Amino acid sequence: MNKSTLFELVAGGEGSRVEFKRDDCRPEDIAKEVSALLNLEGGAILLGVEDEGQISGLTRNRKDAEEWVMNIARHNLQPPVIPVWTCIEVEAGKMVGVIELAADSPGKPHKARRGSSWVTFSRTGSTSRQATREEEGRLYQASKMVRYEIKAVQDTGLDSLDMERVQNYFRDILKRPSPSLSDLENWRKLLCNSDLLVETRDELQASVAGLLLFGANPNRRLPQAGITAVAFAGAEKGYNTVDEERIRGPLISLVSRRGAVQEKGVIDHALDFVHRNMGSTAWLESGRRRRKKAFPMDAVREAIVNAVTHRDYAREGTDIEVSLYDDRLEVISPGHLPNGVTVEKMKEGVVRVARNELLKEILRDYGYVEHYGMGVRHRIIESMRSHNSTEPDLVEEDHRFIVRLWKAT
View 1: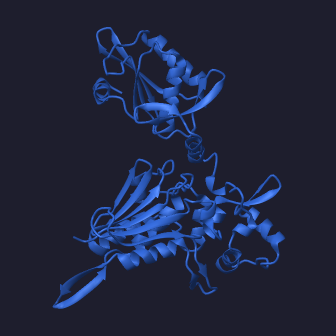
View 2: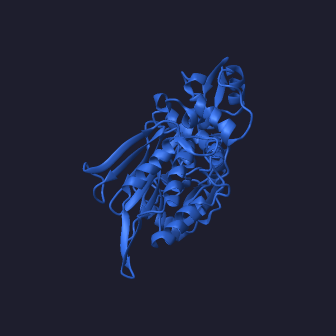
View 3: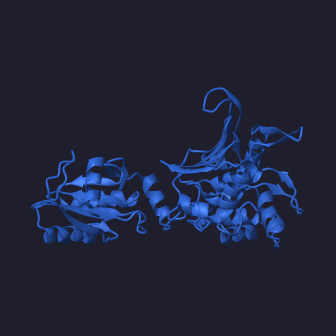
């Protein structure tokens, strides 16, 4: 941090990554802001700057201010952190202390001491507040301390799964011996070992992944388990729609021993929706009329499969959105990208991180997911370039991730 960068931060005001504070506040106030910033995307706390942006300077000397900050980071935060500390002289005798906090902290959720309690804080805009139970759960999930996909779903059990699909997976996809459908005891053991059932208090309940993949009626207990697909008449959302469908059911299709689809799941129903509504492009070539679909199905398939594989299922009540417009297709997946994943890494094909590892592995068994993490680069970016010379948009914004495929102009 240098003086010019400091002045830019002050001029920009407080925000989701910048907090102004006096250094005569209570240690609990500093710990609260550190917790909130680390639990979002990191940032900087400027000590000696008033809320309105006026630089008042530190009341402590440089050494005492640093020791005060480091003691707070060590004793008032759980787990303890070691921030980057910089003291910058803005004018003769006036100093500003800068506490810099890393963007990708592995210790989430960070908690701040509040009396005898430890409290998790979150950041919304320029405000830090106590995290909700749902927000705290997502932080645990992001740090890999809790895997939401193998969480037990209340009021479910073996009878919540479509056993024909389950048997189809083990017998016909994995090619391994499996119990008969009447041998429920051995099925319980097999599915517990596969994390599709979870044992809790001497009873078995379906896991989130088990319901998503093989549930007889997943949306009864997981209302977020589905896709809302809409084809709009123009280039913007509106009431005038061409086609719309709320796609519900298990993610995967029931297939024959030879691999033919016998009963489609959510993924294949969504692909069918796009295929029938995407339209086509026509042109003349050597006096003959040529025509092709607006998008390559490889790119559409990859975008939809990535959405159902990597979305944040802890965000309840929010479907994946598949929206077709006159000029584009958008696939919107709820939740931030998993820790360590960036748009740049996705474009380079170097991503090996999955929020829902079990979902990814089983969808890979079915051939929906490739083995090398190159799907975005090859099946979306290169496929769109080859198909119509357009560049797809990969956008992370707010609490969602968008894949946008463009039609040829």
